[in-house]
Image (cartoon, rainbow, N blue to C red; front, side, top):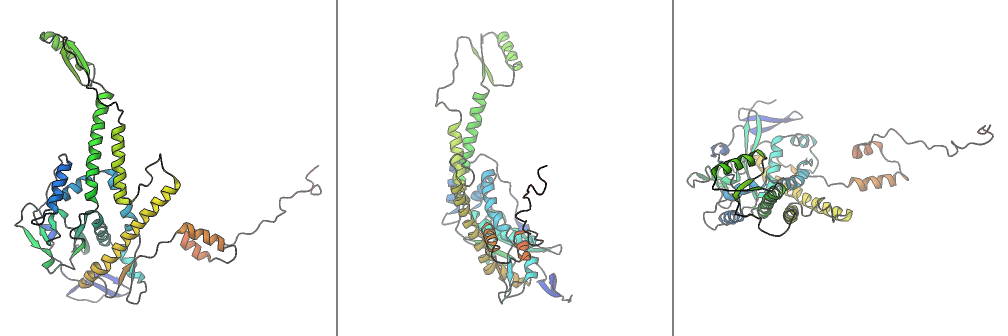
Length: 407
């Protein structure tokens, strides 16, 4: 391998070095002050306040809203919807083409197996949900790494990084730094707050419903115990306390024998009102992230509905793949070329998605009239073809009296 004091080899393809310029950026992430996100109960008022602060015309702050985003993503239904959509794109293998439009298989295989490439793709796709991503590349321990600069510390409208998002004095204009466009890569819309903004109220309402349902189960599932006694007699009260304590863990209280207790009469329910609200919130989040409710409405579902819903999800995944292509070809590849990581003139893309079910039907039909290449069948469907099947004789199992079937 060629020695060069100004460059460090990162990859080597077919004997020709692909280099990264020696040195790194300023490592902005290391200067950011870590903050603890409060775990107090969130409500709609807090969301409206955070949303207003994030969209303020002057001195806008996004950290309250992004802290709220981090909190609502603990909801497993929301998390599953995001993962279902993102992982379909992250699991797709991409191709790198040279300036002549031919696939550079060696560079394609290499980049498909790099952790930092996965990090860039994840940051790009997260802009759909968060609106914006600012990624920093670094070269550490002879490896290229990618780190997402915390969104709470970034003001994409004015191009600022706050090292302490509660201190306006500690900031830099990242778009004016020499690392911008190479070590620092920016993705998304500066003013977009992402799909998660619309999911916030549904997660909060869902948590409220779950909390109320839990209280209902506690009260009516294990009702409190009541003891009447002469509360003026301390000996009797102490004895009553001991009795109630020894009887179990259900809530209890003691009242005077001249007092009475009863539950306030409300709407008679076994929890359906809470269950319906939770279902509504889940469906709304599914519609926002996946564009459809897939596989959840078992009471009113049908094969036609599920097929249509899956098709809608696939349309969104195809849109995400287009987003990856656009950001790679306009932002990532020019930055990597500046760093010397990949050669000039290459492009990023995905092969068209094939419907293997329909392709198999066509293959079976074609096999009745034409010879099908076994190697192609194995590559496309994973079926090991050893040769053509021999036809069984039509009269192989036919028996007659002459053959001695009857004796």
